[in-house]
Structures are given as structure tokens and as C-alpha cells.
Image (cartoon, rainbow, N blue to C red; front, side, top):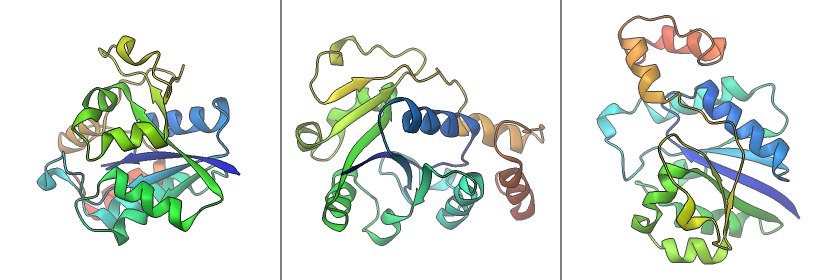
Length: 191
């Protein structure tokens, strides 16, 4: 049974931090692949700050086109909006019964997991691999049987930082792949 890490997010836009985290998870944790699950509308984020979901999907396709072990997953584009992780997991489990799905999340999301729809079922039925985030403590989760704390490199880069830099006309070279920068420029995103 193939073990797939699901990296949920808005990816607004995708940046090198996302790619480093996913690559680490795919190569250092026993996962066979990592799927970037693009959320058209996260129930916890303001819709007004999001680029078009298909633009975000395309930026991920551009960023991952040469990666064998990282894939883009548009499953939430075919589910009711806003998307809830438990509904996506249920759908994927039905569609791919021969795969084991593991959630990938930052410590910041782990802290808010109790607010998620059916969080108790997620913790009961799925493994969660957690990557560190600055300023968050994982002490209360270190002994939870569903949670694995990873040694993923600490990333302080955020999509918010990137959007602000684009708006201020700063050079974002190396913060995201060149093909993504060209796409952002061509579409006039975030300016």
C-alpha cells in the first residue's frame, strides 16, 4: 500500500518553503509521495485575499512539473466549498482504497485542530506528520499516537510575505520557482 502525504493549503502563492517541506516529507519520513491539495476556499481564510483557485493550481503545476514524488491534487475543486479536511479525506479514501493517507501540517495548524470539523475522527483514523513553525510548542502533542513530530527544516517564509513583496514591487527571485514568478507577472497577480 502506497503511503501518501497530503499537504493541504491555499498556496497563495506556492513558495520555496512549501516545496522544501514537501520534499523533506517525501524523502525523510517514509512517504512514497506528497500530494499538494489545493483548497479553493479554506473556511478559516478570507476569500478576498485569495487569487483565483485555478491560478493557484496552475502555479503549483508549474512549480512541480519536474518532481517525481510531489504531485498536485485538485480533489477539492470537485467537492462542496468551503472544503473541510475530513470530507476530502473521506472522498480520497473511497477513491483510492489501496493508498494510506497521512496529513502534513505545521505546528500552527496543529494548535487549531480542535476547531476543525470532526477533528476527533481525523485524530482517530489518520496519522499526522507535523513540521515545526516558529513560536509554536508541540509539548502537549508529543505523546499522541496519531502525531509524529518531524525534523523538517524550520521555514519562516510565508505566502503573506510573498504577496506583500509583490505588491511592493520587490524582487522575489529564489522565493518561488522562476516559472511561478513569470506566471504571476503575466497574470498581474498580487500587485
